Image 1 (cartoon, rainbow, N blue to C red):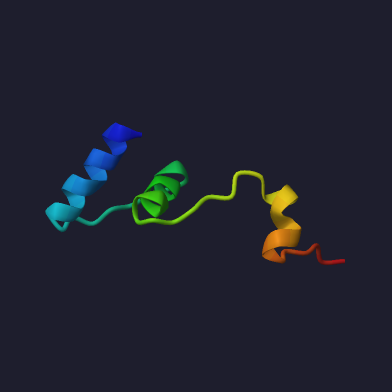
Image 2: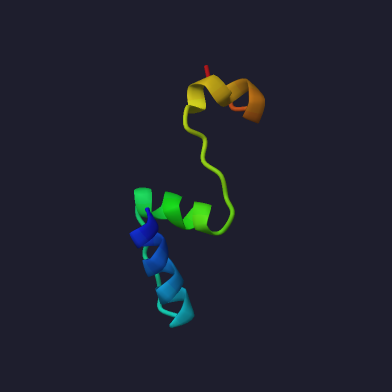
Length: 53
């Protein structure tokens, strides 16, 4: 993770575009202070997701 964070910092300093896919987007989100939900099914009541019937 530390290596990827350094790459993000460097790219942002140089104002380079960043294409983040899958884990890259998760890391980019966390770098900017975001959070991740590790187990969405167990969190559905907390965040208000519901199954469509």
